[in-house]
Image 1 (cartoon, rainbow, N blue to C red):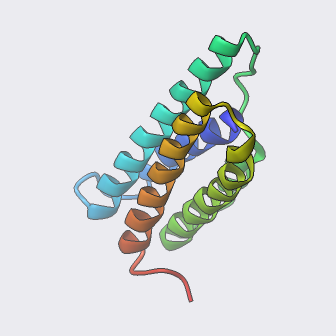
Image 2: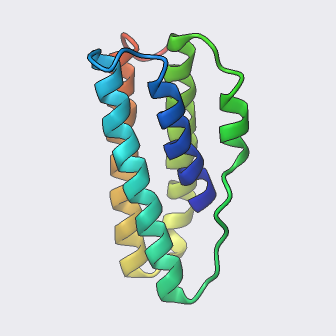
Length: 127
């Protein structure tokens, strides 16, 4: 999950360049990027506390993002990635210790907030 969160944070920075800094879309992307960066830090702290080494790589989500051209597609791509992460959180929560579960529930909630903000920026949920 850390590699996926890191990829999301980097993709958001990349996608922000496609929007005017004064635009509502840019502001939403910046807010979502800040949450993703915070999530990376939270996961890293959990891993460090557990004594688990971790990589500084990104998932393939970043590489695929390089092929997304249209601004509307960029927003949809981010929404799709955030929904994937929520599903992963849902599948993992039951197996976590109480502290880790609370941290991941907070991250899950931040993803749902990000999805809602990106959907508003994209003009509503797809289909």
